[in-house]
Image 1: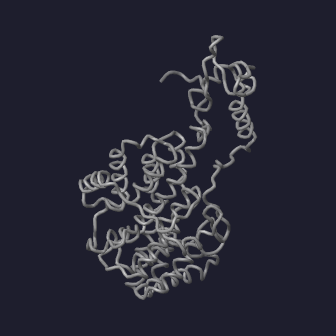
Image 2 (image 1 turned 60 degrees about the vertical axis):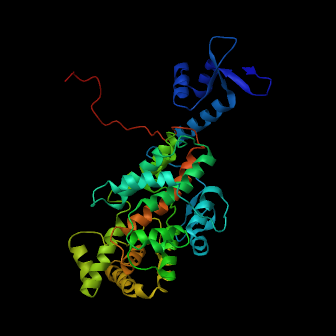
Length: 413
């Protein structure tokens, strides 16, 4: 073992292998994966290693080896804590935070732990122009996630600093990407409604041709804020895997958007929207719920495995929707859905998808509007998780496969 003048302890490859309990060749495999860093020994022929880095890797390896078989992947995070009846952003009640601060301000809280009043995000002209051109080239039947994925890729190409993974650079990308995504979506309402530059106001004209009233706009901003993060949902895990491989933040967001294309994550809002529209057309929720059950389908907008009662995000949105006159019929239909479905099966409660559907139905938005709101909002959370993951050792999310195929050697086919 070598003691350096600056106090750093350097050890040889053999000593590192002994500490890790592996062969010397495996030590260099750790180097190639980015789990260890080596330095050429100026005196000898081999390499030397930082003893503290090797000891830390050995400790992690022992912890991973001690994990019970089949244990779920656990990821350290300081962002969101979920309890049976509420959730928190950096230790602060998320519903209270969303009720007092706007989307951009809460995004900054999640990213930096500070809450700057009046925070605004601005899209860089070059990135916005590139994203708009790319989205405009898509077929008319393209969905919101299609558009957002293409806009993300275009914004990435327009950013020559996208490979800079320093916290400052990633924060800059986050503040630019979110308004770029919104600005790249085709407008439905008059451009004059863009108003004061708040993200919710900009998004409104991409979702509906209805003129925004302050109460409805406040509900949209609340929805954006409540949905920013929700621990390690499937899309968020994909983002962290990409960031673990040191993909740039735009690529990490693209990974999250790719998961939203699946029918099991992100699409429930569209189903809940259509169910409410059908309930309003038929004059009641009972026949609609009965049709879902008869077909063996889940009733959308009900239940959440992480909450014992009603989803706190739904509770907050329902309470705010009470003050929006045009939301009355859809709100009544949603409550009838819950009451009808719970009549035979107790313990069914509304989740955020049903509450979001009340907003989209009552404000003349299309069925896919909930997906758009979810994806735009969650981009801030994905960026927060990417920021965290860039501080971890690279390529740490590498689970081992459980091979179930025929044992070798097998005859050549």
